[in-house]
Structure formats: structure tokens, C-alpha cells
Length: 247
Image (tube, rainbow, N blue to C red; front, side, top):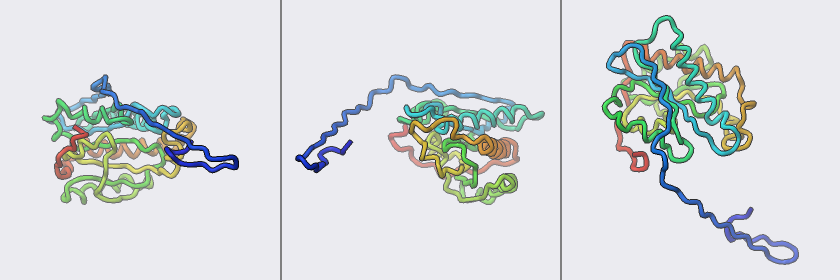
């Protein structure tokens, strides 16, 4: 279909096509419908390692890569850590956010009522870029923690993951926490073909490579356990004012 007022010339005359968009943003009917899975072991001031993904998907396809794989990765990471003979010293919290696709409702709702525990988040990660093989990692910390964060390469390099930089975004659902100064780690998967399927009818399970999915799980397990068990913690990025649209 042609855009508004574009003219198509044909042999027998001129055809004008008019496209009117009357989409309307409705008031939110549900404040928050996310799923919080809390795995509490040892209470040490409720220090939290947050693992995030989002439950909703676009109306095309099945949402296998956006974000079914992210949900699967984080739940499997939690299951594997839970199965260890000894638990890590910090809490692993899995958060499956609601309505990432159209408004970040879950992301905006998560910090509300939890303001007192934001500083207890020692690390946050989100899986929301498919399940291609992870090839690099980046962090978002204070400058003094960058060298510390680089030590992760000892565990990630055997899986083919390299160090990148200190400008991690954290994932869409973690944007509010990023503004609040929570340290972030991004595990970057190979997204070469991600946007060939993203938000289309082709976003289906057959696009997921089980071997690559397993490597994602292993990479997230390494970082999550490292953050939950290590002696110290990473310093967070500077706290910034939260944009009005994210409050």
C-alpha cells in the first residue's frame, strides 16, 4: 500500500491512494502483570542478582526468539544454580517482565515499592536479543570497577566470548534500573539474522539453534554465579534522573 498522498501513474490515468492511521493509545487497564520468581538462599542484606526477560511477544509469529528464548535462558540459569550442592551467598531473582513490547509496563512497575532495595541490586542482566551464540560482553559500572569486571573473561573466553566496553545498555526492561545506578552486564549474542525474523510471522521455534541456546545458558550461568558468590561487588554507574516516560 502506498503512503498518504503518494501518486501512482498508470497508463489510463492517475490513481491516488489515501491511508489514514487512527490508532489510539488507550489507558492501561492492568498496572502490572509480570512474574517474579524469587530464589532466596542466604540472607545477606538481600543482595540481589537480577535475571530478566519479558513474557509478552509481538502479535506476529510465536515469539520464540522475542522473547521466548530469553525466558527459557533465565529460567534454566536459575534451575542450574538452584541444583548446586551449595547455594551462592546472594539472592538470584528472576523477573519475567510484562508488556515490554508496548510501553515497558513491567519495567516501569518493578522499581515502584522497591525503592529501598534498589541499592541491594549488585548486578542486573536481561536476555532479549534472540539466542544466537554469545560472542562478547560489556558492562556498565563505575570507572573503578571496569578492571574488576574484565576478570570475567577468564570464565567466558573458553566459550568464545570476548571483552567489549563499559557502555552496556542492560536491555529495555532494565532501563529504569540503569538510571538508578544498578550495575549491568550485557551478553551480546550473534544477531546477524535476528531482525530477519523479529516481529514477523517467521519468529518461530525452528529458528532457534539448540547448541547456541545452550551456550547462552552457560554464559549467563557463569556471570550470574560470579556476581552472586564473589567477595566484593561492582560499583554502579552514576545515578541519573529518570525520564518522565519511564516513571
